Length: 125
Image (cartoon, rainbow, N blue to C red; front, side):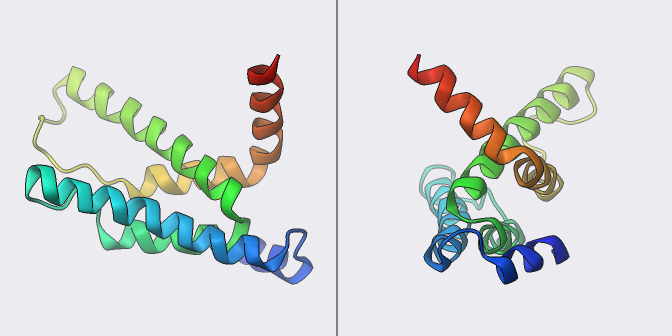
């Protein structure tokens, strides 16, 4: 989080982008948890994951936090498929999502701008 604090001190983005990042990081997971409550009648995402992504969004801004959520979800899905295929986990077992979100956040923090530029260049052409 120290690196994120340094980024806030130099604030390469407008300050509103960081507030929007915190709201996006928390809000997306909060909405998914609400959807899980409606459909499955149980929580699907813990409050710690929501707070983690709010802190990440506050440090990196809204574009990068959305990328971090995407990368973390892809990593989580890959790990879940691997665990299910090897029999290490069963279908109704809770799997920790925080480590995947943390890994996605680190990847997005380090290479997020390059990944977003690559994707936009690839998708437009």
